[in-house]
Image 1 (cartoon, one colour):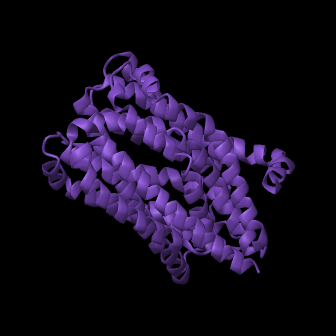
Image 2 (cartoon, rainbow, N blue to C red):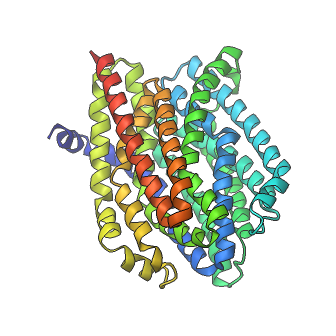
Length: 424
């Protein structure tokens, strides 16, 4: 009951900060709806190329400074002094350097990627992915600075601008029946990132402090945190994207159907993403202020709120998966209803592992998240190797479910134990 009381007593502040964050992440949900029209418009072969390339893009973004952005958000949220400004400057510099390096590696390995997925024509995709990595990193940095100050309303504006540009281009192509390839989608993303960067940089202009400079010890602090985030994020990528990559190689005919179900179930994750936008900087600050006894209560209240919000969508995915797929995709991928059922049911477990992983990073224990996803990735990859050749997309869904459940159980147990001990 105390968690319900906390939500009730702080409802005005939660709405003030949380609603913009939910709207901000809601643009991802609406983009998911746009993706449904993309899936319906593109031939299965073209969508398979997009699904595989999207996984490669996520890995490129991760190595291109995505892991450093988490460290910036955590460290720069701890206060408002010179230390935090120098940490932010150091993180920005390192993120840009890694983005350029990742883009170069994507372009240089284009031939290897193309030959590995030889049945799919990935010509030109690595160059576009490099553009997405660099522009996405640029667009994300001012947004991070806004989040460190809980300026979720401004973050909402920047995310809406990015979404409007991206979906506007895709919508124009769809209406004119000229959307024919994944290349057009990634080009729209690059344009949207560029526009979004100029808007977010202007809004966050007062949060840049170049005069604070960059110091080697601050770079060391950022990189020490980032190294753990990189390990965790890489392992997380392995167990969340191995399914698509392995399906593209072993069962390419299942990629489109699996991707369609995954897109629908992914809409539920918008709530989790919105909550994490607020939870990480918030817990970082109250922990650094010595208010350690408040942390577990805030995490459990966040989990409770997320579960309440996603429960209706989970119910529909579990009890009416066939009808949902038949309605959304006009019967195109109805046969993958069992995949949607598994992934939809899994959404009820995700807040537990996700929020405790965020909280552990905020209290200075990002290695817990690393250990959790290493365990999950080992389980996931092992089960994918066994199940995908036998059951295709359904086997991939089962592997994902087993990995997430195990990882969430370990993550919540170890985090609760540490936070309770530190708060004594």
